[in-house]
Every structure is written in C-alpha cells, then in structure tokens.
Length: 114
Image (cartoon, rainbow, N blue to C red; front, side, top):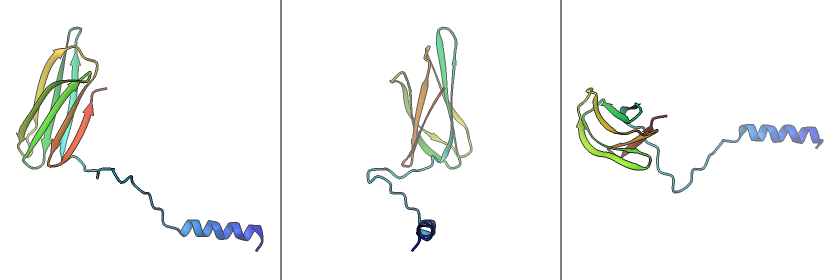
C-alpha cells in the first residue's frame, strides 16, 4: 500500500474512533450547587464587611463557612426558604480576600472575592 493510502486509512480510522476520556478513580462526581450564591467584600482603611447571599428554588438547610486569610470568620447553618434571598454579613479587621464555602444536600461550592 503506498504511503499516501496508509495515511488516509489511518486518518479515517482515527476520525471514526470514539473519544473516551478517563477520569481518575478518586475523582468525586461533580454536582452543580442547587442555589444561587454571591459574596461581596467592601473594605475601608480599617475594616472589611463581607456579605454572603443565598437564594434556593426549594427550601433547604444550607451550611456556610466564611474565611479570610486561612482563618475562619464565621460558620453557620440556616434554613433557606424557597425563593427568598437570605444574607449574612460579618465585619472584621481589613482583609484582602474572603471566601465562602456552602453545602447543602451533598453538594458544595466555594466562592471568593477577587
């Protein structure tokens, strides 16, 4: 078989092969977080006010952990009513970046301020 025909056959074989991507065995399944969440950090020269907001389509118990510079600022668990935005605000000495980790029904998400 001439070289050109081999290359065409190889290209056709590769194009028809299914693409399979293997995930590591220890990888946890990805769940989308069932609530809309947001975080805001408003700082002045001395303090930072961090607000975390949550809105869920269904009534759920949500756990939240707010951190800054690897220190826990607040941890709480609250029932969030369906369709009602709930927020928690904490004021602390000035921080550059704050993060919130939220969990509900086996799903979790982490978001941070820039």
